[in-house]
Amino acid sequence: VSDSLHSQWRISDQAIANAVADETVILHLGNGTYYGLDPIGARLWEALQAGECPASICPGLLEAYEVTPERLEADLSELLADLLANDLIEPA
Amino acid sequence: MIRPAGYSVYDYGQMITCEPRMSIYAEALRRAVTPGCTVIDLGAAFGIFALLACKYGAGRVIAIEPDPSIELLMPMAKANGFADRITIIRDISTNYSPETKAEVIVSDCRGTVSLYQHHIATLADARARLLAPGGTLLPMRDTLNIALAHWPATHRGATRPWLGNKFGLDLSAGHPYAANGEMKAYLKPRNLRSAPAVLAVLDYRSITEPDIDVPVELEATGEGPIHGLLVWFDAEIAEGLGYSNAPGQPELVYGQMFLPLSGSPRLAAGERIAARVRATLVGNEYIWTWDWQIRDAAGQTRGRPVRQSSFLAQLHSPKALANISNQHVPQLDARIMLDRDCLALVGEGRTLDAIAKTLQERHPEHLPNYKAALDHAALCLGRYSN
Image 1 (cartoon, rainbow over the protein chains, first blue to last red):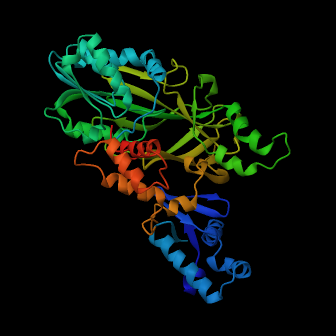
Image 2: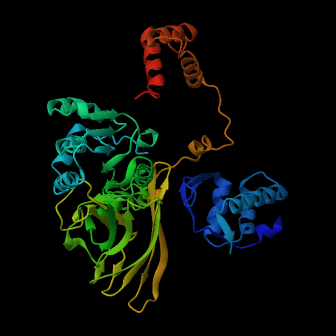
Image 3: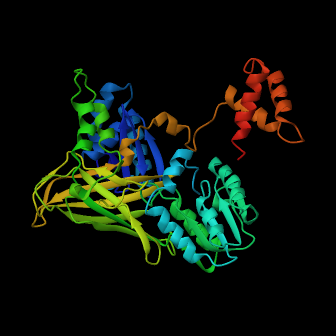
């Protein structure tokens, strides 16, 4: 779990993101598929775009949401795995 | 598949008088049609090419068009004595299976540029299934061109309302959307700030891929702000017969496509915009994406790379997207229930009247009277008819 959160990622060349309010919609230009991110996913995407490692957003999210550190880390790791599997991010 | 365009009859009238487009198409048809041959007018609209094909001697003309505009064709065919030679297919061409292949297929399914909806796939399908060996496709080839453009009015239009309105309101959230929208333009040679480069050659005799992904470098011819990239096409309808919507050419119905450059970068003469331009067909529409960076005369980059896309001009709701994801669990609400029952009543010779009456009996809380039930049934079932 912690490996992916402390790794560096970059946005795939095929992914383009459009943020509306606190949510984000990503389009994969290669296959034309749309993906929606909730506010936490949008915060993760924003961090990845800025070149930050995913773990850097944990303190802020723990403050903003009632969630245990273990649960948050597991959720973020799962989301990272989804983003990677769908070719939206790649290892930096 | 080309979706019905939704043009008005007035719009079609402008296409008839759009010169030299119309005369070039007419001459290409006149040369291609041989006595008694079969012609397909693909995406026919009201069928001007079908009528011309008859006039030039075609023995059989099939006009394929899903839009209601095709209803105008038969009265016109009768008025010109061509009715016995024209067959109308009110559908998309990919659903049409011909008895015999055509010697000539003519179409103009472009939008502002040739990459428009399913234009490429439609022509590729027509070439493979509907065209006789050795037959003629009109148009033959389009070449897309791109150049740097100076168009201050559009820059002002995309910035002032959002960043500097006189009411003291912060409307800046709208600016990124306004700054990424592709626009229709009618620019002149004086608006160009670089020599043009070829973006793509679309040869309809062989093309299969609908998308493009092209690197270009455009060198500024003088000092000043660059507001965007201008895209236009040179059409070759047949060998030696063509027209263009380039700046300086007669204005055509297509216009040109303008892709704004964020911040309108100021370039010195000899500096370049290095861009990667992508047109990606997503669903029924193209997404244009232009990644760009300034390079100085020595080839060194200046400033940050910028990604712009027509996708960034669209407002999306993640909630609406969730409804089309494969994990979505649709709920049986009143609208779905009414449609389900309406569809289940189709068949066994029931009229719309009978369907509406049954629907109203079953759902008086949603369809309080016969008129409401009839309107609902007509709308629901209308989605399945031409």
